[in-house]
Length: 392
Ligand SMILES: Cc1ncc(COP(=O)(O)O)c(C=O)c1O
Image (tube, rainbow, N blue to C red; front, side, top):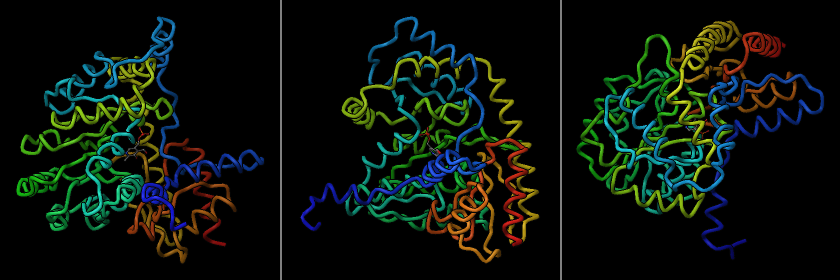
């Protein structure tokens, strides 16, 4: 296979998102008649709120069947700009907003733009697996930024800054974070931004897709709120998590002027536009009532407390209370299992789907991620099965 062109070899470096592989295996086992409880996949178990669904149906009935502008319809970009002003106090022009087919596509675009052999890209570890996968695809060197229990499952600004050198092109930040549910403290973000001022060659991509999913009075601090890095900041956000719209494939990003034309051309070459009715659904999501979102957050909060309490009763397991997202990230190093082996065996032997920490990075050994986007009844049943399994 040495005759393969470099471009194909690059494709062989693309990784996977194991939470989706776990989901596929769960579906297979369920089809065989097994009773599966899925705490693996990272998507809300709620339906998209009715008024959003109705807005998309109405858009189709009203004849919105054609292409839209590559960067998204203006009323949707205006809605995103208005929401950004409300949540961050920062004015963003709709001309800097790109509507994307999902949150993931922004990381794809940003990493493709910044990555090449010789470049280094810093990414959170453990973190969303696609960061590293895409970095490796471009030939850039992935440099993990440790996300540790000692730092309350966030990054240390000092440690992050120490990893920057002249080859560093991009720094990826994700708070609230997947898989840990960690939230970067304001003080650490401020220190990081201050330090980044000495490294003007480093672009920053801030993945803020869980910006509304916060607990215990935590508030979101967007990197947009720091003028000193605005001209090299890409914000990733979207509808998937906040409005339970994972299957709609709808996201947005905010780009500096000097990159906007390039990402718009990528859209033109790659996907032309996001499907029109989804964009109308997106307007209804942002501009419509938020009570369904509030309800969902209340439920997540209840389940978060229950799952963490139950996890801490398991032999060899400890779990800190996550501050955001909908994942419990449990330390199971004292069970005597390797994390991925435990996750695989639990699914095959007990029908409980969870994801091993190593699927989120080299620092993930000793941990498993459990999504609590599932009913209290199922969470209790799943943890009882895990308990029995660990005590066997
Ligand atoms: C941190 C993070 N960023 C981005 C995404 C991708 O979101 P989307 O489904 O909108 O592509 C996810 C999804 O799990 C995520 O956890």
